[in-house]
Length: 200
Image (tube, rainbow, N blue to C red; front, side, top):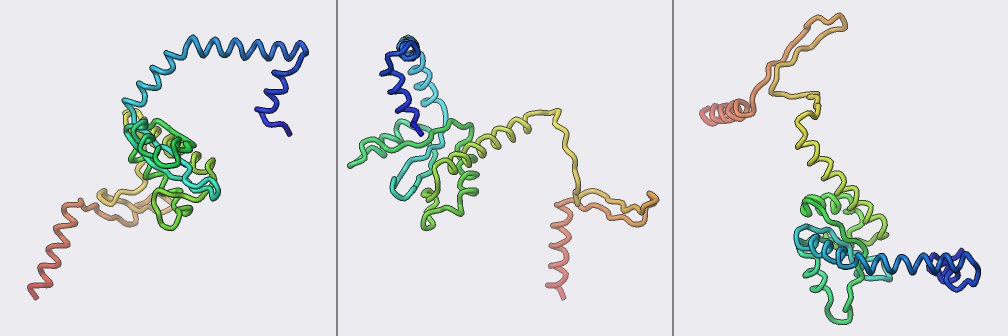
């Protein structure tokens, strides 16, 4: 099977009418990028200065060893990794998120089984799997924030021990009840019991 790059080269070198159409397409694409490159650059710079990021870097290419991290300044962080022999860090994934701490904690929780020798930032796993975890955590975080800010969201309390509970039989008749106790009252009752024990 041909790779996309090889297929592209074959089409570019073709002398047929389709090959000419293919070359014309890439010429048009280059002009489009050239025309909008400043807008694209400005937008990228704006995003890098005002957002928080989750990133994945390759630490060891031979062993699928990946580093998962977060930062508020992606350019500065990548510059810090551009040292020694690795002038250009092998970046696998960068994602802009609303809360980098929450998303990172979530991703590390689900990737914990793949931690490399107990290191909380290094993971020995496939790149796509780690990317999927980060993406799903960011998606979940965004969804939770949206639900919290939505006053019309319907929620249903299944159990709350601070409320009175009635037990019904199949006929709907009350056969028992428990009276709710507030958290403060519960803690004071515990203290009272302990005090009584000490007094004895």
